[in-house]
Length: 136
Image (cartoon, rainbow, N blue to C red; front, side, top):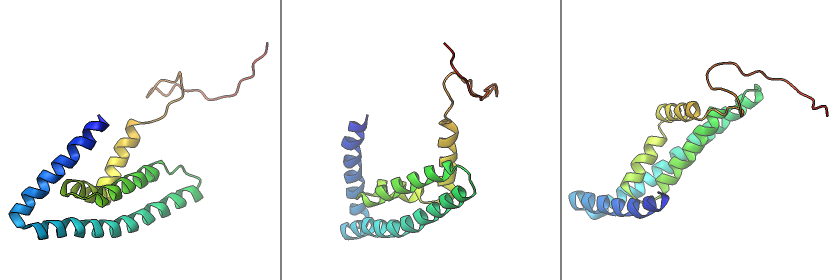
Protein backbone atom coordinates (compact mmCIF):
# COMPACT_ATOMS: atom_id res chain seq x y z
CA UNK A 1 0.00 0.00 0.00
CA UNK A 2 2.69 2.60 0.85
CA UNK A 3 4.34 1.78 -2.47
CA UNK A 4 1.15 2.74 -4.30
CA UNK A 5 1.04 6.06 -2.43
CA UNK A 6 4.59 6.87 -3.50
CA UNK A 7 3.76 5.87 -7.06
CA UNK A 8 0.29 7.35 -7.50
CA UNK A 9 0.59 10.58 -5.46
CA UNK A 10 3.36 12.17 -7.59
CA UNK A 11 1.48 11.30 -10.77
CA UNK A 12 -1.74 12.84 -9.46
CA UNK A 13 0.18 15.92 -8.24
CA UNK A 14 1.83 16.41 -11.63
CA UNK A 15 -1.47 15.95 -13.46
CA UNK A 16 -3.20 18.45 -11.17
CA UNK A 17 -0.36 20.97 -11.44
CA UNK A 18 -0.42 20.73 -15.25
CA UNK A 19 -4.21 21.18 -15.34
CA UNK A 20 -4.12 24.16 -12.98
CA UNK A 21 -1.11 25.58 -14.82
CA UNK A 22 -3.00 25.35 -18.10
CA UNK A 23 -5.97 27.15 -16.56
CA UNK A 24 -4.20 29.97 -14.68
CA UNK A 25 -0.71 29.94 -16.18
CA UNK A 26 2.41 28.00 -15.28
CA UNK A 27 4.11 30.84 -13.41
CA UNK A 28 1.05 31.51 -11.28
CA UNK A 29 0.58 27.80 -10.53
CA UNK A 30 4.21 27.38 -9.42
CA UNK A 31 3.93 30.62 -7.44
CA UNK A 32 0.84 29.24 -5.72
CA UNK A 33 2.74 26.10 -4.67
CA UNK A 34 5.65 28.18 -3.34
CA UNK A 35 3.33 30.61 -1.55
CA UNK A 36 1.41 27.83 0.19
CA UNK A 37 4.69 26.24 1.27
CA UNK A 38 5.90 29.53 2.79
CA UNK A 39 2.54 30.30 4.39
CA UNK A 40 2.28 26.76 5.70
CA UNK A 41 5.78 26.88 7.17
CA UNK A 42 4.87 30.00 9.15
CA UNK A 43 1.57 28.58 10.39
CA UNK A 44 3.26 25.24 11.13
CA UNK A 45 5.85 27.00 13.27
CA UNK A 46 3.24 28.90 15.28
CA UNK A 47 0.85 25.94 15.68
CA UNK A 48 3.70 23.66 16.70
CA UNK A 49 4.77 25.98 19.49
CA UNK A 50 1.18 26.34 20.71
CA UNK A 51 0.81 22.58 20.85
CA UNK A 52 4.11 22.24 22.70
CA UNK A 53 2.95 24.86 25.22
CA UNK A 54 -0.27 22.90 25.84
CA UNK A 55 1.73 19.68 26.31
CA UNK A 56 3.95 21.33 28.91
CA UNK A 57 0.96 22.83 30.74
CA UNK A 58 -0.76 19.45 31.00
CA UNK A 59 2.45 17.79 32.19
CA UNK A 60 2.86 20.45 34.88
CA UNK A 61 -0.69 19.73 36.09
CA UNK A 62 0.16 16.02 36.23
CA UNK A 63 -2.16 15.10 33.36
CA UNK A 64 -1.40 12.91 30.40
CA UNK A 65 -1.11 15.04 27.23
CA UNK A 66 -2.27 12.28 24.86
CA UNK A 67 -4.47 14.48 22.66
CA UNK A 68 -1.82 17.18 22.50
CA UNK A 69 0.84 14.66 21.45
CA UNK A 70 -1.40 13.39 18.67
CA UNK A 71 -2.11 16.98 17.63
CA UNK A 72 1.64 17.60 17.57
CA UNK A 73 2.13 14.65 15.25
CA UNK A 74 -0.69 15.93 13.02
CA UNK A 75 0.95 19.37 12.90
CA UNK A 76 4.25 17.74 11.91
CA UNK A 77 2.49 15.71 9.21
CA UNK A 78 0.75 18.86 7.94
CA UNK A 79 4.12 20.63 7.79
CA UNK A 80 5.60 17.74 5.82
CA UNK A 81 2.70 17.84 3.38
CA UNK A 82 3.14 21.58 2.92
CA UNK A 83 6.84 21.22 2.16
CA UNK A 84 6.13 18.63 -0.52
CA UNK A 85 5.54 20.31 -3.87
CA UNK A 86 2.02 19.92 -5.16
CA UNK A 87 -1.45 21.33 -4.84
CA UNK A 88 -3.13 18.25 -3.39
CA UNK A 89 -0.57 17.85 -0.61
CA UNK A 90 -0.75 21.60 0.07
CA UNK A 91 -4.52 21.40 0.48
CA UNK A 92 -4.21 18.43 2.85
CA UNK A 93 -1.43 20.18 4.79
CA UNK A 94 -3.39 23.39 5.16
CA UNK A 95 -6.41 21.39 6.33
CA UNK A 96 -4.19 19.75 8.96
CA UNK A 97 -3.24 23.15 10.32
CA UNK A 98 -6.85 24.18 11.03
CA UNK A 99 -7.06 23.84 14.84
CA UNK A 100 -10.71 22.71 15.01
CA UNK A 101 -10.24 20.06 12.34
CA UNK A 102 -6.99 18.89 13.92
CA UNK A 103 -8.59 18.59 17.39
CA UNK A 104 -11.50 16.64 15.93
CA UNK A 105 -9.16 14.26 14.10
CA UNK A 106 -6.93 13.87 17.17
CA UNK A 107 -9.99 13.02 19.26
CA UNK A 108 -11.11 10.43 16.73
CA UNK A 109 -7.65 8.87 16.59
CA UNK A 110 -7.38 8.83 20.36
CA UNK A 111 -10.83 7.27 20.79
CA UNK A 112 -10.10 4.55 18.25
CA UNK A 113 -6.74 3.59 19.75
CA UNK A 114 -7.34 3.28 23.47
CA UNK A 115 -4.72 1.03 24.97
CA UNK A 116 -6.29 -1.70 27.05
CA UNK A 117 -4.22 -4.10 29.16
CA UNK A 118 -4.17 -7.71 27.95
CA UNK A 119 -7.13 -9.70 29.25
CA UNK A 120 -9.23 -6.60 29.97
CA UNK A 121 -12.54 -6.09 28.23
CA UNK A 122 -13.31 -2.82 26.53
CA UNK A 123 -16.18 -0.71 27.75
CA UNK A 124 -17.45 -2.94 30.55
CA UNK A 125 -15.56 -1.32 33.41
CA UNK A 126 -14.58 -4.64 34.99
CA UNK A 127 -10.84 -4.04 35.07
CA UNK A 128 -9.48 -4.52 38.56
CA UNK A 129 -6.06 -3.10 39.30
CA UNK A 130 -3.84 -4.59 41.97
CA UNK A 131 -0.55 -6.17 42.88
CA UNK A 132 0.25 -9.82 43.12
CA UNK A 133 2.99 -11.96 44.52
CA UNK A 134 3.85 -15.34 43.09
CA UNK A 135 4.45 -18.01 45.70
CA UNK A 136 5.96 -21.30 44.59
